[in-house]
Every structure is written in C-alpha cells, then in structure tokens.
Image (tube, rainbow, N blue to C red; front, top):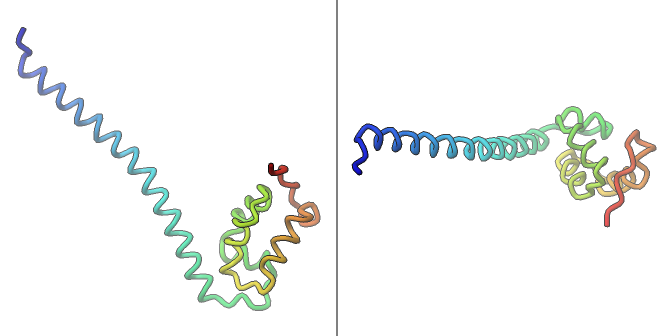
Length: 117
C-alpha cells in the first residue's frame, strides 16, 4: 500500500517539530546553568574590586548578594559551600567563621543541619 505524499510530509514535520522542542528544552536547562555560572563569576569579580574592610560578615554577604546562598549552605551543613561563598569576601578568619557557625548554628539563628553519615 502506498502512503500519500501529504501524509509523509506531515509525519516529517511532526518529527522535526518534536526534535526542535526537545532540543529547546535541553537548551533551556543548559542556558540556566550557564547563567548561574556567569552570575557566580560576576560576583567574584565584583567582590575582588570592593573593599569590604570594616564590614561585618552579614554586611559583606548582603553587599555581595549571597546571603540566601550562605543561609542555605549553613542550614545544609555544607562546609565547603560556605567557604566558597565567603572566600571572595576578604575575611581573614574564613574557616574559623564557617566552622564556628556550623558548630553552633542556633547561636546565629540557624537550625542545626541534619546529621551527615
């Protein structure tokens, strides 16, 4: 049985459109990841040019726009993530700040992170 030309064309168009939609959806995820990486790089450049001298840790976090990221890292007990967030902010006692906050999060208004296995 022969397939009408119009039906073959319609099937090709549907396949092409489906492929484009799938590629676009994958591209959106990649673009979002690229934007997030770009934002972190921009934050590091801005932090490098700012003088944070005389500011508290909270002031530095607010000015850099990373307060929510810091809060999330502490609440998750993510020591390395917290260090990475603070590192561009010019703290002399970087690891002591992170370790002190993680050791007693309630003192700083955080919930204790879940126990890690």
